[in-house]
Length: 264
Image (cartoon, rainbow, N blue to C red; front, side, top):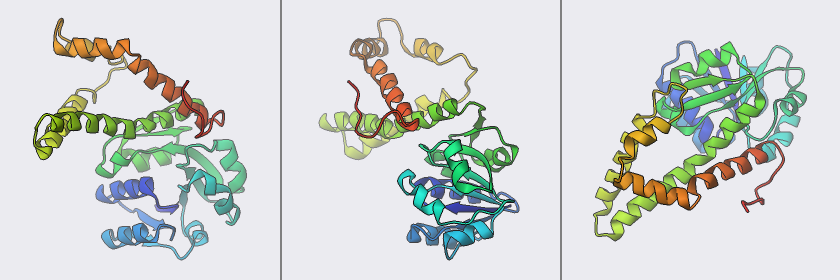
């Protein structure tokens, strides 16, 4: 399959890296020249990757084109392109709806919005998409846990939860800095923190659709230190604040909020 990418940022780099490392058979990737250094390095690293002379060439030489430009640039970039009728198009753009994308790429066929995350570079983590599409599902299956939904509001919810990545690493930094402040060697503090959270995360990789309350109970020994810290965080509204934050991000996804809006 000939797959083209319009926009080569962090997410595109992660997806291309994952696909190439997975050695997907018959895959040829054409990148737009935007982010010149990143595109060039990917083409130098992987034989399946080539850099186009311009965005129109990406469209002309691809069977499937994935849009990965910044939302604020999308109208200008897409408006300058000539989409053909037999071209399939998917979008990584978080805050632009399927209907808006469809209107901008006619007469090409829009086959879905896709929500990848950076860990797919290591062939781990999820990719959500809407609507279900076998072509996209088969393409991304080697690099991620593929979750396909029919309700675009659900996809917006998945996109919203990806906003937890930076806060997650902020949590790790908080833990590591706490250890460093108590005389722990910085390298040991980072290694311990990273290893602790990686080990904890491995317990969550085989969900059964029953939520994670069972794991909470399993790790909160009665009268133990886990139970105590969880109790104190609950009392501060820590977890409620996370859910309120996700509500805000989803509102932004759906055009009901902006970057300037904050939690009350």
